[in-house]
Image 1 (cartoon, protein in one colour):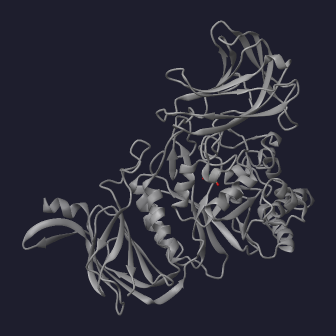
Image 2 (cartoon, rainbow, N blue to C red; image 1 turned 120 degrees about the horizontal axis):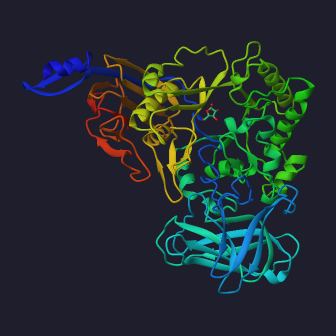
Image 3 (cartoon, rainbow, N blue to C red; image 1 turned 30 degrees about the vertical axis):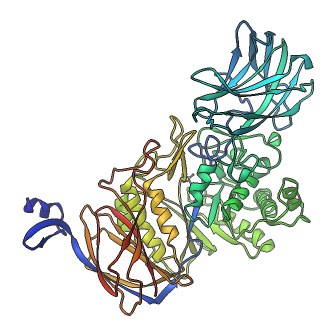
Length: 636
Ligand code: AHR
């Protein structure tokens, strides 16, 4: 038995107390901390968010729209997510119509030819939503649609939210005023007492024969901060709990598109929804562009964080690129216009457009990213493209910090974005990655990183890899100024995921944070503003730590990560420190690296609070196996 224990880990020791075998454990470590010796400042923007349209992050995710394919895009199979309703003995047919639509952006519609219908036998269409429609009791849902009819007599339109299971309408509204010209109609649906469920659909019917054309059928639940065209509250709250400082958007691959014509064209994502043509995303589904540039900025405003705006820089995923020089000029101008839209006063052309769109005040912007992962561009054009954007942007906005997405040979960018998608073992080795980075080079933005173990969301082994990695990011946060996990979101419904290992999972009704999410919550919650001097001796290879201080609050934050299956004993030495005798501890722990949270068991692993009562300038602490801890010491 003892022999087997030793065989399992060469580094392991066996602790014998009073002659009896207790457990195998890592060799005891000594961690010496000098709270008064500051090594460097911690970057105040170290932890942020990275987002793009992937895994139904916006449509079917954060963006709270309930109607799927609201603009009636059709394909070989018909009009996805829409079905004909012929109640009773009504007779109707539905067909995509490419000859008429409510705007230049939306030139198509759904035509419903009602041959026979009456009040008891209505006909129309239904939408199944994004894996259903979440209905909650006593809740108001706000909707609208664009419509025209061959005669006003076809109306009114009855709009109902109907239970899939019982066929019962849970809320109904009657919309009058149909005319022969396209017009937007608004309605409100209010539920009464019901059991919350996603098994519902939306029905629009008429009770008279005739022709009806529809487009942009939209329905929203109450949103975060009550914003029109806004976001799901549960997901916004989960992000807020991460204490982020910035949002990198709109990608990622989503910025670039598969082809230049499929890039994120910000000018087509602003203003009324009816003026947004929508566009194909590289993640194999079509984007509504309801989450447009201003919505991203509102998202930042609501979380009180800064945008890190990525501008399209002339390279798309399938390899098309724009040569630097005159061909690139219009793309550079587009970026300048975008920066003016975000930061310009209302006396500027694009600042005035932003004001017209609803936000007169400019947004604060410090960082602009030129492209995404341009090391994929094998044409060698990135250096020239970056330089062209750099010169044009700096000429007008010298204060902006410009991020490069690939190393440059002859030009020092302000900041370099580096991405890491690895396994936990690599992060254990790589926790020292930035320890020796040249401090005279560009600042580093780790704009995408994740330990990819677990699907759809990371398991505890991944959380341990992440936590080990984050100790290195904090220790090097003089050079690593910003970091963001990616991808942030995944819709866990069948077909919702395009990329495995995503931080926050959700379905139509509920959401949950993965163990890795909680690791980030802990790290960002106890960030501090200075890294203090420390030294670790004698530990096993899977012990990681970070020690920072919050000078204003007079608190010391120690993060400890034991990625071993054995406990880790640590002598914590704080020479000369005057600390309160008890400290607050938040622990994340699991019995297996495969343990995880799911939509059905969302808090199987979550931080547990406790108190450490033996704090002094020299004390013993035992870190259980597979544990991430944040300890807050208060200075006396
Ligand atoms: O995060 C998923 C993808 O990984 C991003 O879109 C891209 O930037 C990276 O390759």
